[in-house]
Every structure is written in structure tokens, then in C-alpha cells.
Amino acid sequence: KAWPPATTSKASALQPPPPDAYMSRSAPLVLLRSYAAQERWMGLKQGHLIFEDDGVQYPAFTLLPLREKEDPDAPLLSLVSVWLLLALKKRYQAMATDQLCQRHSAVRIDAKIAPTLLDFLTGRAS
Image (cartoon, rainbow, N blue to C red):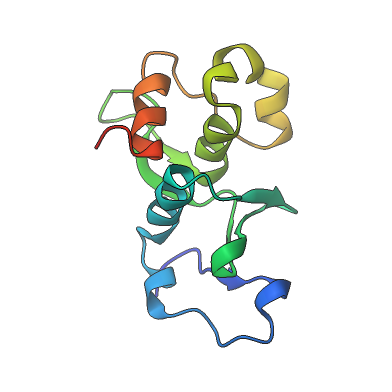
């Protein structure tokens, strides 16, 4: 089984559980990119990133196959760190202060890769 497991949100409590596809290691990144490209709502609530249209949520600390910096030995980015970049978009450099990142347990993404990563996440680059 993948870690961390996805859970269904309260909104989907009456629906069947999500298919195994939501349990794959790449599912959070795939959903994040899909939602970002389609400008669909995703939100952070009680330590979970919620993908409302799909009725799933993942712990904010879920690690993605993306690095904090261009260094191949750099730590992986968490879901909440990447979500914050998507939420702030072009305002990220000015608004993603140390205080804001700490409040959400996010890591500030290196200024050198933030624009390229944002393009990748929104589907403007592959």
C-alpha cells in the first residue's frame, strides 16, 4: 500500500471509496497538476489537502517526487509546499514569507526553480 493513504472527505461519505488509483504514490502530484491546469478548487484544511471534486484528501506532509532545489540530493517537497506555490502563483516570492511557510509547515521553494515548477504544475510546461 502507498503511504500516506488517501482518505475520503466527508462530502463523499455516501459514495463508494475511491479507486486504487488514488492510492498510488504519484496520485497526489497527478491530481495537483490536473486541478491546477483546470483551475479547479483544492484547499488546505486541518492538515490535509482536499481535492473536493474527487472526494479525496491527502496529508499535507505527503512527499512528492519533486525536489526543493535543482540539486539531486535536495529533500523532496511536501504537498503543502507545492500547494502554497500554486495558491500564491506570481505573488509567491513576495508573499511566501518564512512566517507563512512555518504556519503551514511548508518549505519555501527556491526562487530559481519556483517559476519553472509553477509552469510544470499548471501544464504550461512538461
